[in-house]
Length: 165
Image (cartoon, rainbow, N blue to C red; front, side, top):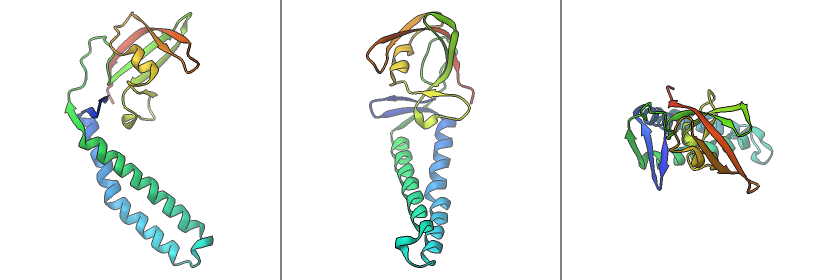
């Protein structure tokens, strides 16, 4: 349920709280856990051939990158309400589209920042070609977007409703 515009990311209170909880865990208990893994691996001896040590250091690097990403995201976040159920495609909406020429070929996705991606539903960024093409369109309208090969694709908006989590 996010929308990125310039440097501002709009989040619902629920999304903000979820990301803040992740940041708190990663910058607190998770740091302690990874430091303990590194210390235990260091005790095993020669660091040049210590797979456990190198794996723990790599995990630490990924964790610290995520901490920086979340910190930056939350510093620039604005908390707002979820979009209204108006049938107009907007960030925070679950959108169902049909591809031109085949009404049975449909795709349902969440139009939101990748930071809010979940395993429950595929997520497309509002800045993606598809996201840009459908954003602002109403249910029943056609939209067009550019494919990676430079060609245009058409879709019809079948449904747009607020994401319920």
